[in-house]
Length: 115
Image (cartoon, rainbow, N blue to C red):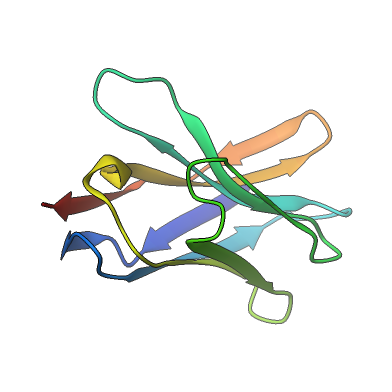
């Protein structure tokens, strides 16, 4: 089992910034990928960003250039720096652990961007 605990969500005005963090613990092994996904009301969950064990990031088209993902192997954390936030970024953000077919999700943290 892997436990993922997100923090850092909240309410911010458009154009502002937020930083999300996710602490991972448990039976982590292999060259696992950590990432962030989000789900807005009435929409499917979508990719925000992932980062490989070696530190290679991948971003969703809608956040490329505005968000930055990073991970700390010592602390077993993954962070998401979100800049130039837009109302359409409003969603529940979920931390994700993936290693092959094994996948775990955090409980989610709400991000609300007001216009």
